[in-house]
Length: 85
Image (cartoon, rainbow, N blue to C red; front, side):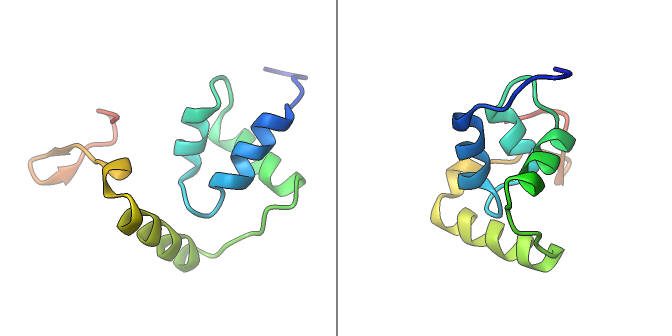
């Protein structure tokens, strides 16, 4: 989507999910937007940069609050990122 504008609704989704979801999860909510586009937009709209430990902590808190939202497919006891949700 070169030259595409970001809507207020898309910005709201990024602000809401930022820090509690992965960029892949945010991109899944915004069809046509890549993970890199999400990261760039989050930076431009002022979402805070978080270190990896802080991101992991926030994702664990969100998982504890709603474990069904974070179902992972496992193959042979390992996470398989290719199967989706």
